[in-house]
Image (cartoon, rainbow, N blue to C red; front, side, top):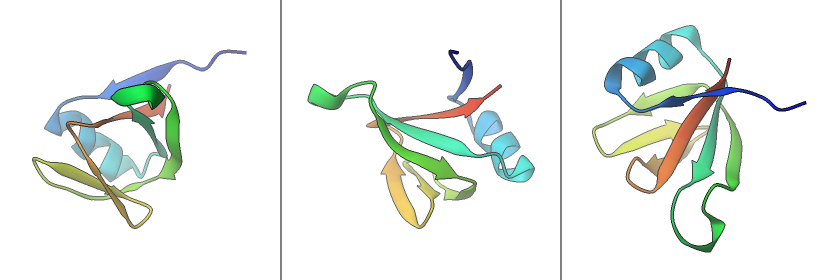
Length: 70
């Protein structure tokens, strides 16, 4: 059964997911692994205008997509 995701694209989306402690999955958006899951993730620990920290790893916003199941 397919899962529907919300893609986190704005600061408001990231803030909402962080406050709700939602499990955020990380997907590659570039190269040969585009649209492949990189990390099944966890809650957002921190974010900046350039990166997001999930499960003690930093991911660049320009290279990864962040999704929460809805």
